[in-house]
Length: 221
Image (tube, rainbow, N blue to C red):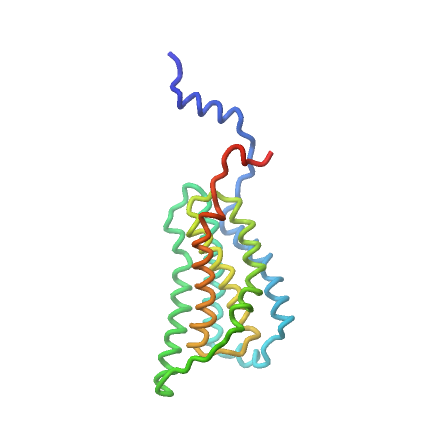
C-alpha cells in the first residue's frame, strides 16, 4: 500500500532538513541578556553622572523597592519574550512580568495619592528629557533582546516584541533613576513609565513586520 501524501511530504522534509542548534531555556537566555545589557546601562549612567543624592536614596526603602520592582519587570519581561518564541510552551508564561509590573505601578499610584493628600493637589511639569534618555539607555538592552528574540519561532509577534520592549524600557527606567533627580511619583508615572509604555505600544504594533515566518527560499544557505 502506498504511503499517504502527508507521509511523503514529511519524509521529503526530513530528508532535506539541515541540523539546527536548539535554543537554550529561557532562564539562561535571560541571564545572558542581563549580563550583556548591564555594561551598556552602567556606562550610560556613569557618562551622565550618578545622582548626587544616591547615598540618601540607597537608604530609602521605598525607593529601593520601586527600583527592585522595575528591574524585576525588565527581567521577567525578557524571560516571557524568550518563552514566547519556543513552540509548545504555555501561553500563560506571557504573564510572568505582571506581578512586578503591578507592584511598580501600585507604588507610583500610592505615591501620587500620598502627594495629593499632603499638598491638596498634584502638579505636573514637562520633563522632555525622559524620552531621549530612556531611548538612549534602552538601546543596548533592546538590541541584545532583538538579536536573541529573532532566533526563536515567531509564534506571537505582537506579544514578543512588546515584552522585549518592556524589558529594554524597564531596564532603561531603572538606569534613568540612578542619575535623574526627578522622583515625584506623578512625574515618574507620566514621563518615565509613560515613555516606556509608549515604546512598548510601538514595538507591539511593529511585531508582525519584525517577526515573520521565513519561506524556504528565504532561509540562509
